[in-house]
Image (cartoon, rainbow, N blue to C red):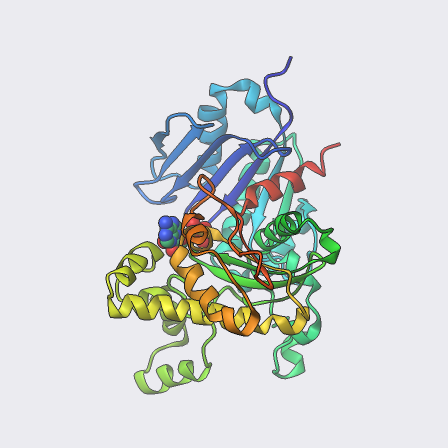
Length: 404
Ligand code: ADP
């Protein structure tokens, strides 16, 4: 009997990294996971582990995405040829599919060209995705390659949610509109949320909060996205690790006029030097900020309170497209682990929306290894869940749909 059922390879390329995983698309069991990091730099290296085994690593000698994937085939999968042979499909995470793609799509030359077309909306991510697709098609030539777009889930938003109030030609000619991000995660946690509600997905109204280094919140009705906090790019919406989230555009004019910053410099400040990092003065990482908050540090408290205040305001605003709300779901590194971020957010929603939660259960809901599930009490008008997200599983399942 074969050691493995058919598996899927999932690839997620960043500008200087490539994450990979081989998993069982049925139950999500991960047989192999790893990451090639610092690509194109002298210190480029690759690390991996089989299942729960020991982590191994090796130098890539300044190699790029192609070298990392070549190493995956020749040096890692070669250690378990049965696993290699079980891979029947490859799914690629793509940050931006523009308004072209609403579904996972089989890669061909036209798809590659379209991903290249929308590079201006994801200048760091889409070029890296293309490198990954091209290298993976060479390394794994016999299996289907499928792209799964972070933006696809948000394509069901109505124009009143995705249009900007700017002259028409910027929309028609330049495609400037809200695209959203983290769609794969919002889709997964809304589907899991429906299961926890014990209702068919079509009958659910759920607010999904994906809170990682990048963070976004979506209004999902019947499994379809009606609105989301990210905009043209992942700079909009919530306060993030190093990103501003929503901000008056006049701040840009002010910095350019008064401080003679260039638009490129402002982009760098807004993307890399703002958010939790700027407010706390400590870190972009929520862990030390929560520690500072516990100790009464003023700036950490401001950072955490601002994060929760902005999130609660977005959640409140999504009562408008949804009408009523069945559940709020927290996911992502912060949503799954920071009980403080959840507490401060839920405390703001308590009075206006009748949300009640169990303080002790909320403190225990820490990551997928510990408790995950319902945080709200039976008296709550809205259920509150912590559900670990699993984008790899969605991508693996999407990739399997193209296996003949
Ligand atoms: P990414 O968007 O890079 O995938 P993650 O989903 O891994 O990010 O989330 C990273 C965020 O999760 C960081 O801000 C990190 O501090 C936060 N985080 C992880 N564990 C904890 C924890 N125990 N308490 C508070 N925050 C945490």
